[in-house]
Image 1 (tube, rainbow, N blue to C red):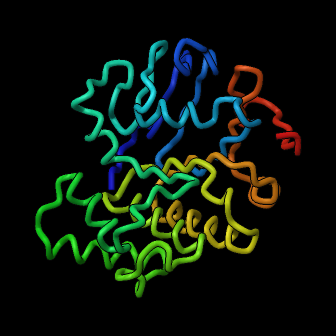
Image 2 (cartoon, one colour):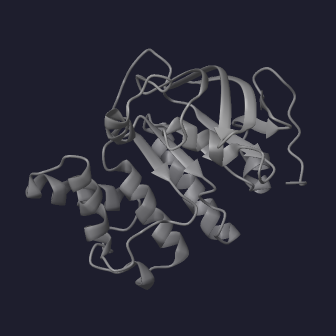
Length: 236
């Protein structure tokens, strides 16, 4: 795990683009190494675009941004895989290989990020599956798992390389409330162990129940509950 006195994320005067369109302007915020932060906003307000900018799927064209020691305004294509090794990325739609077992899905990520020792790979696979409560699932195929179990596999995959932060884009969006609550508690446990979490969500129950810091995309701006009053409404 990356331990540093520097923030995990620090953005100044960032403009987030989708193609030629500026989705968010003058974005400024910092995430510390042990923080849990919600990212909210209406559909199309820029949440996913901001996350994609942070893991360099969208280029940073304006402003300065540092994440896990990388300067996004200067990053070269060849360095993006090294950036992503320090991040855990959790998608709403899972993005698992449906023709491969849970273990094979995890091994694929390990090989892609430089793991070579098969014994260490197996031990790490067992470790992360145990952490997410799926110790007996390694030989199962994704279609044999429930939606909540598949999301736990995605979280295990994101934890493979001991990331400094998890970037989660609507990780409970397709799950029923009880399953969503269990997934959220897993994120809390991971956070308590020292991994920062930035979670985009539409789940108002989570927002009301857990008083974490909130970033809100609204009308082309990013509001921060540290410096502004933010309404958690039901209109998005």
